[in-house]
Amino acid sequence: MELLPQALVDGIMLGAIYIIIAIAFSLVYGVMHVIDFAVGEWIMLGAFGGYYLFQWTRIEPLLLLPAVFVVFAAIGYPLQPLIHRVLSGRRGNPLLMGLVFTFGLSLMFRGLAQTFFGFYSLSIPSRFSNGSFFFQNGGLSVTISSVRLTGLVYALVITGILNYLLKHTDFGLGVRALAQNRDAAGLMGVNNKRTSAYVYAIYVGISAMTGVLIGMILSLSAKMGPDYTTFAFFVVVLAGMGYLAGVPAAAFLLGIIQSFFLIYLDPGYTLLAVFVLLYTILLVSPRGLFGKGV
Amino acid sequence: MNVLEVQGISASYEDTRVLWDISFTVKKGRLVALLGANGAGKTTTLKSICGLVRSFAGSVRYNGQVISGLPVHKVVEMGITLVPEGRQLFPKMTVEENLLAGSYLKKAKGKRKENLDRAYAVFPRLAERRTQMAETLSGGEQQMVAIGRGLMQSPDLIMFDEPSLGLSPLLVEEVFRVVRALHDQGLTIFLVEQNVRQAMKIADYCYVMENGRIVQEGSGRDLESDPKVREAYLGY
Image 1 (cartoon, each protein chain N blue to C red):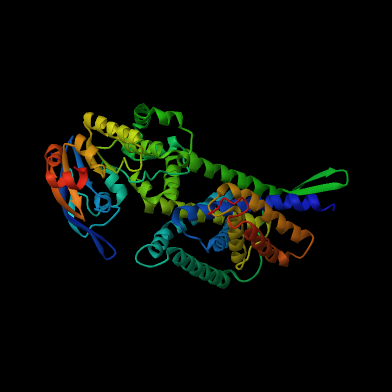
Image 2 (cartoon, each protein chain N blue to C red; image 1 turned 90 degrees about the horizontal axis):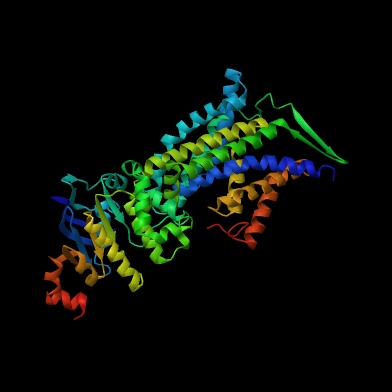
């Protein structure tokens, strides 16, 4: 019982990171209508990118985040036209084609990563890794590690930036127009191809940065990708496909489940619990926790 | 001077031919109407002008420049605005955001404030509903937003696709009044309508379309006295 507040706090801070993963993932789905199976691999590649960049420069990894973003956005940008080609044209069932294509990408990335980076679990050392804050109230105590707190701040900052970008800039207006009605967006002069490429670049960049954070808070390995792909799916589907306002609740729930299994049970059963819960909730409410998805 | 010059365009969806050799012109400052029943190919004609549908033959010129084959955002950049059939608003945006989306184009951005005031002046109802989500509006209000959004683009040529479709008689009057007022201000207008009677009244020149072909043309008065048109579209 005395560990309960700790499990909750840890879970919420982990959940904040999942919010970022899920928002970027939803953005790509909304604009490009692609369910990107490679999301976890972008996180993994980003984590390794941050790891090696740190080894090379010895600069505090948090300060390397912008560099990681730029590098990965530059990788994502030219990739979008490829995905677009797979989806359009005379092939049937674009949704399935997108799934298969990104699934292929994810297999390729994971294979290459295991070849080049090996199978070991690593972590990215940050000067925040050691510090922590300790709170006590009667018999209950909570320790907040500063690296997890950093994750929470990161999530707030990225959410703030994305919100500003989407709600208060013309680029964001174009993105939302494209997501809500593609033909009408074209009639407003929105360049579908270019805007989609920017969105994909931003998504890859954000996923990669998030990978660095995960590498700091938890760990990184060449085979971590599928777990995070699953988590992204879990959050987005539970929130209700396309219902962004539902994302935080679903993400916090996932974080809390994960930290409960870490503290009380065997972390190996986390995925099982996640799926059982997802199944049960979707059985009761097929359009997500709030019934507002598509 | 010809603003829009369509020459022999033909188009098909998959294996079904929908347009046969469509030709017409719209002169500067004129209000030209394309009339016809449901399924005649009017919307496809508009879409192939804008680049939303690819025609496989013929050409579209805008101010003398060939625009067929350009992607839709390029066509729009040149000054052509389409107010599409069924409004095609952005459902999860407010009325004002929908209007602002109209000024996404670089050339319209500078006139954003001015055009917004103009749109609200034309449709005072929209000013009252600025912060309301587009999906919660009535059909008539949605049509007002669609027209207002088109005006936000500072168009040189504005094309309306069935602006009166599905509206109450009172709102139909209102829409035609606005179209005519825009015409009076000197805007070049291409109006596509099923409401033949009303459209003929305000148009300078009309084309009649049947089964993917243009079958007749003339001024509104000429067509009104044509027995075939009277029988088919006016019912007397």
